Amino acid sequence: MARILIVEDETVLADAMADGLRAAGHTAQTVYAGEKALAAFREFVPDIVLLDVRLGAVSGLDLLPVFKADSPELPVIILTAYGSVEVAVEAMKRGASEFLTKPVDLDVLAVTVDKVLATSAAKRRLGQFEAAQQERLRHTQLVGQCPAILQIQELVDRLAARSAASDAAPAT
Image (cartoon, rainbow, N blue to C red):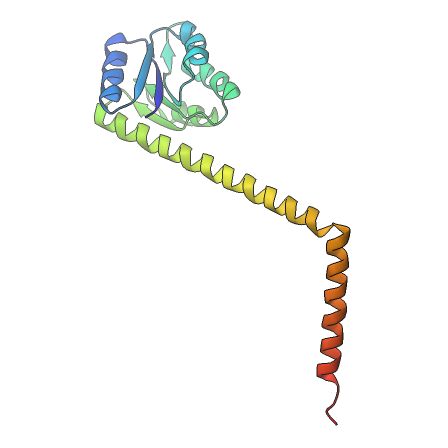
């Protein structure tokens, strides 16, 4: 399933989340200090990050744009015990996919992780489809500019004009 990086300074909570997510089939790694989060992020290469806002000397809201700069499509779920509308809005502005308040119900966490991963996968598939459509359009435009294709199109246009003229001629 997914590789999940949990950046949470409350070790008991971080371990409980990791255990719950592992039981759901995911691979989870925990980081208990914000200062170590970026190195763990780059080494572990997660599919999703669970990121606490208050991590001692480092703010999760400051780490969020750093993670997103490295991996723009990476889903990040922000966790905080100090939930407010202002913090939630700021987290979303900085690129969070979801916002949960602590204490986190492990069932809600698992459902949220699955929902965020499904949304991320759908966005990836949509991007791949759009890229394939753009490639097809580019190919069609290139083929349409080919001299042989242009000659065939000109011949078809002349034949269509003759056919239209003969259909429009009065019957004698």
